[in-house]
Length: 403
Image (cartoon, rainbow, N blue to C red):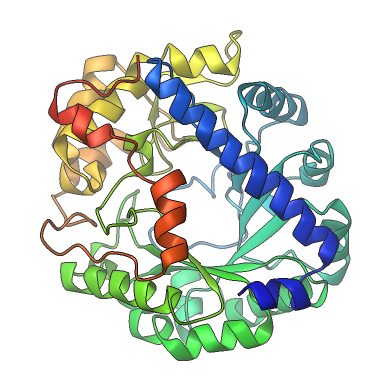
């Protein structure tokens, strides 16, 4: 992997990544850990859905892509990012809808050369011209979603010709030497097709530097619960990721396990929260309820620190499970929303009815089946900078330590 980074990456982009994402990202986590010891709270990583519009209509999508367009304006984004930087943050996940449909996206990226942005995209707006501009900016990694072969992709994404258009965007990014990732929402229709060595080998050959296998979460107005993985399939996916990390020269991201294979939820541990296209601050992208907004008059640090709703979410989730409270205990999430009078932060205004209709489903937490990391590098990184930071132990003792 180090050899690939040295010989395949644009050296300027690699340097930007190492400084903005590596050094400053680590510093952000260290500041987060120090804050937690003092009973203070601000997440080291923010995920921001900057627009609700999208050119696709994916199965199980929870974003109101068909509703009237709403986007976070440049002034509000700059204020949010600048205030987060004052707290020590440097990394921001940019989501949608489709982020490249935001007309001022590049203005936002270019305004913060000291930050690093990961753009979750279907890749279809990445032309050679767009890729060249991303390379010039230098502080962006596109994470391009590939959901299967041409037939499966068309079904999953709700359009014809999706696979070929996405692959053209991926090729444009790679031709311009962008640090590029490929993500897949693992579900029943693409599980066997993409969770295998042949697919990873193809990505490596193309020049992709990292892969991210999400696990499909059946939520939203049309949940498609039939696409959800079984517990054994989720366990097999975890085993595959651990084995490939120790074998293949490609980074593989996961957000649900520590180095010992213990399950965790990034929102419950306080590692990240989500901001939707209307500026509402949600616990995570699939928990579409909020009490606070980035448009509040307060500094964003105070908005997060003073949120009783987010604090209660972290504590309730940590006390209930090391997995996903949305899937395992939708009843507790409903009680939490009612307790705080949190508003439905969707445009469709049916989030509570959707939550009430949900049945308990398995998530990543399966005690007794933990699969520790085989790679020493991943074990070390997770031990230092990606774990629960004692959240679940504090929850067991009746306090999550976040103020």
